[in-house]
Length: 78
Image: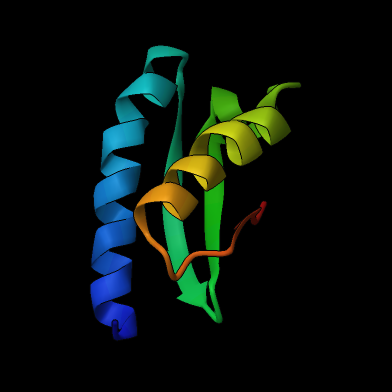
């Protein structure tokens, strides 16, 4: 799958996750996809939450890896 199609699928998955983050006052912004890595920025309450690493790894990364086979890792960029 070419990168633009992968990016579209990534954004669709993030759009599914976003309401859950927004319920807690946060959100996630897609930055880019390179070499299997999705770069995002956690914003709002998620940006300084003590559980943000868990949200990133157990929530966002798991969902993306399960739904988009090209994704191997998710990295938060401050």
